[in-house]
Image (cartoon, rainbow, N blue to C red; front, side, top):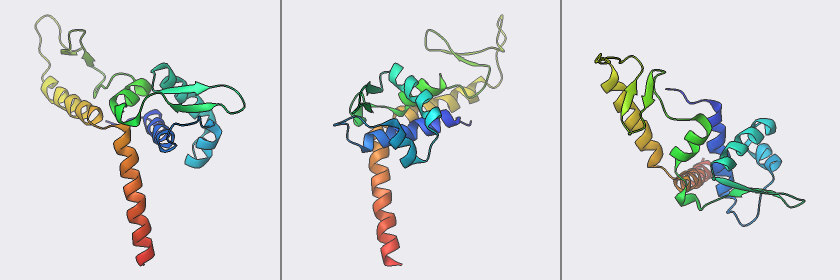
Length: 155
């Protein structure tokens, strides 16, 4: 399953915002420059993240964006679903209102032969995203930068 650039750029945007600490809002243009991402696309993504309650905005000369909640309270499942919609490994895969997995190929007692596989794939992806916080990504990035700096200094 491939996620689109919405998820990739949106997660990168959230990490960049989280890296700022949240004391003051950050201009989206400066984040776009720092992350080498297209500003117009980030404007579209940040609107979805704001609607989902993941970022907040402030207008004015010193305006911009910041995380709406602490990074350790933001799950990657929330971020990805706010940008991509519900996680579905196949087009026929639908989450039922009661939490059960439905398949559009099933009707009148017919059973989908691959439903078990796609249910497991869905569960694995959902658990991985729900089990990863924004704070973990920020910490991982920080550790990785330190290791790269040490390795570069030793060379």
